[in-house]
Length: 262
Image 1 (cartoon, helix red, strand yellow):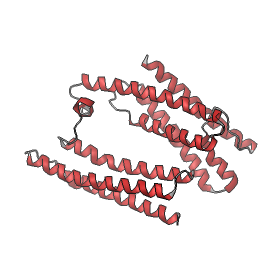
Image 2 (cartoon, helix red, strand yellow):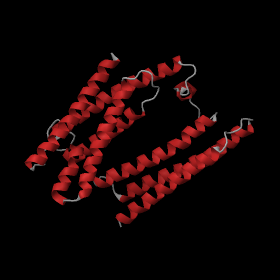
Image 3 (cartoon, one colour):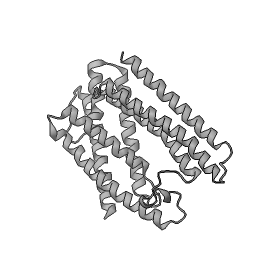
Image 4 (cartoon, helix red, strand yellow):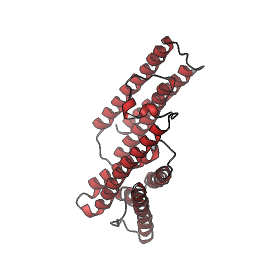
């Protein structure tokens, strides 16, 4: 039964992407800015902007949106049909990308709900698939006593890390969150969805989170060391360097955002 939903998702999103590409080629050939009902409006919007502005940036954004959409689709499909993997990060990224795209489409074409309805259907399908895959992976982790992901199960959830591997996972997750926040801000700025107050608020929240994780990494490492378990050579130095560099880049891009919007 699970694979039925997996195939439905694969065929449905694949058809949406294919229709969008055909729609784009049609608009380029005919000089139109028309949106087919079975297309993704948010991907077509950069081309619409290019027609009016002539800015190469819009073509870059169009190519970026297509590459991200197709890449997430291919990688998430591979994760779905691989029963051995215990996590599906790309499917989760794909889900949030479709969620963001659907939200944007509603804002842009809200009065023409029929253009957005197919993306909303995809979102519902993906939510069902996400729950099914999550259940399947949890069962696989429980059946594998040597799984490195066993501590992520609901019954094994821990507020405080009990191993260096858990500390490393949290520390390395911070740059991913920072990158995601930067991409989200760029996306919202491009579509003129959010005001500067919202963007700066988001930057501030991520900045505070970065400080908490940085200090928490140091505190947790020292706590485990006191219990007699010595950290691998250069462990804390590597993690702190990674966190400082990612935070510095995050601050630089936040300042660039401020400069370009002044």
